[in-house]
Image (cartoon, rainbow, N blue to C red; front, top):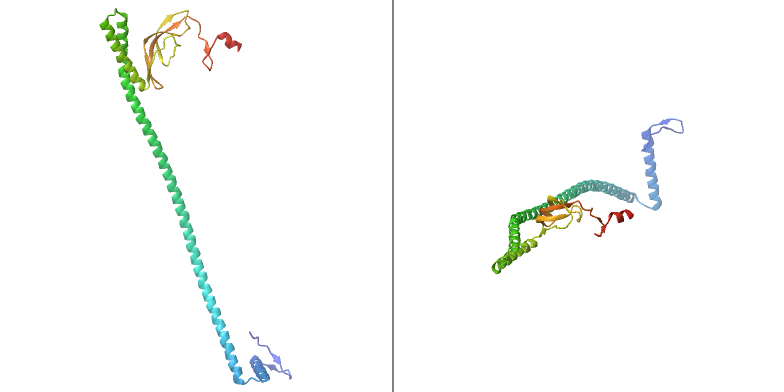
Length: 263
């Protein structure tokens, strides 16, 4: 940009800016002319060269404008792609969260199904056991009658026919016990054993100084156990008045009171 200044001529008179610019242009033209003259270039060649330079400058400016426009478009496309990428990343995170939630729900449903399956299996097993227990409980009085019949027949005078009848009843009794044993049913016949309140029912007491205190003296009615469950307690009489039963060690050996104190 040219800044107009005032200058003074040799006579100290002010010169207007337009006049200065005109003089500068004239000086440049003179300089170009001098340069052209120096290289032997004609005015037409100088004008042609000036046109070429002007065309080059115009092309460069057009290229710069085109490059600037392309750069602007590329920036816009980059921003748009960045925005789309951000949206896609958000969608991916949302999809991952939904997948994790679905996995958690599936695991919970699977756990609920396993619990339900185990619970229903246990309920079916318990129902089966209750049904079998009810059947066995209903059969126990029949077994009691058979045992009483066998015992009564053995106490009477025997003859051949009665002996055959008793043997037949005994065989039926044995078969019934064998069938029940396959279902895990076993009799509780604790004669001579220590009294157990959980599986024995005391119906009387008998004084016996020769037997340990609280020993089963007589079994009036056998008890029965089905698996780990006592389905009927044994009706027994229990001794009293005898010595205390020695304590048992972990291996089942009896330890007397004196020996226990020594330890």
